[in-house]
Length: 535
Image 1 (tube, rainbow, N blue to C red):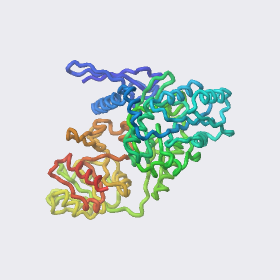
Image 2 (spheres, helix red, strand yellow):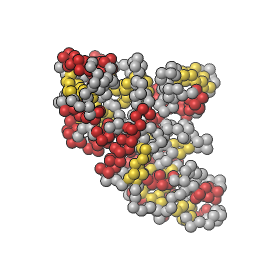
Image 3 (tube, rainbow, N blue to C red):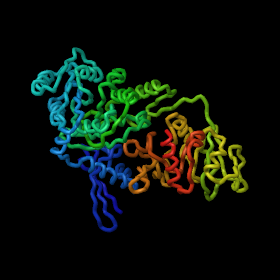
Image 4 (cartoon, rainbow, N blue to C red):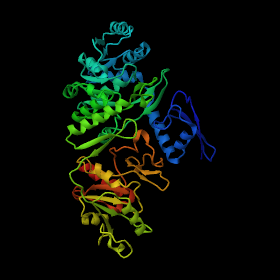
């Protein structure tokens, strides 16, 4: 297979075209807009190194399958007919803070509301004491043209949080959405929200997928989000736009907090999801984030203060939840690392689950690259005469089965490791335990890479229809971020393979236990699902 790469409008957008010539002579072309890979001004050779991997091909195909599904044409007549059948047709207020926005961008914002298939909405605009003379006449014009548009004028500039709260003060809807004054909603956005609410009336927090839109209306960087992921949201605000909440929830948690300006939406999402009854992710590009010069949509460095505010927001979230932790800004834009503070260092029993060619050499590497202070390594007794290492951490047990070794473990926690799996960092066990000791954690795995530093697994998904396992990011460079931090940040996953598993021993003993007859891949997945069902 031959891969060739060329930029498409490199001065404008982080987009490029991927041409694939297979050995059979087939030619395939993809227009790729992958985040965190090609940014405006990036040189060709850097982009080439990023894409030069077989594993990326799976990601590209997945990306375009998702995009094709999300961008399927909307049958407007069918949508309008379906709306008439909705038993629950709540009013949705959309709060928009306004400050010195160009008329063409606000016009696009307002028009996107007026073009909604679902018509029971109100637009609440709050001018934040804009000095530009065109703002007030423009807002008055919109108010006169459509009775669903409401306007409030602030006497003093209060920045985005206070302006949004002013917009919320005139909102009368059953649900409230949040929007910026230069962004746009897809015409089916509110329809999808109300459709979800008719399916499940207990939903009180909703969010959608989003993409970016240029000044000339070209859309790019489609962001297909995870379903509700409580671990990921503490490390990165993957929700962003479009958020809609029930009024009862809004009144319970309050509006935006100006102490977190720059990350006020992140703080709100953290507070609201803590109190929400049910959280719903609506797939599809319902929100178009305007990418203009100096905006965070196009340049994540343009608001460095926002990341400091985000750090404060996550720290506050840990304190509200009664968690002892220190939050620091991670090396990736808009991401954070939570270092939990524990009163003691529990013992961990490392169980080597299979043979390797030179077990002594492997164990030396494992011992050298494990900085965690309280652990033991369990091995079947047959290795005792084969291993020429004298170390008090090594302990030999009579059983050969994984379940039997877990029962024999002295540790409060157990880590199953494939023999030959060597840590890439000395703090690997500390990092697993950082998450693993949390009460919300059942089973924890790590990023497993091969000898070429390509991802083997960062968790798996189960395709129940075809009875197979899916490996997101398999083959991707191990040091890359993955699709929107999928490799780089802690997150909730559906399941993991047996390569590297850490869990609480007592929780394990309450389960049926590991089933070795299922084979290497599926025994870890089965155990993962047991932990999940016990929660």
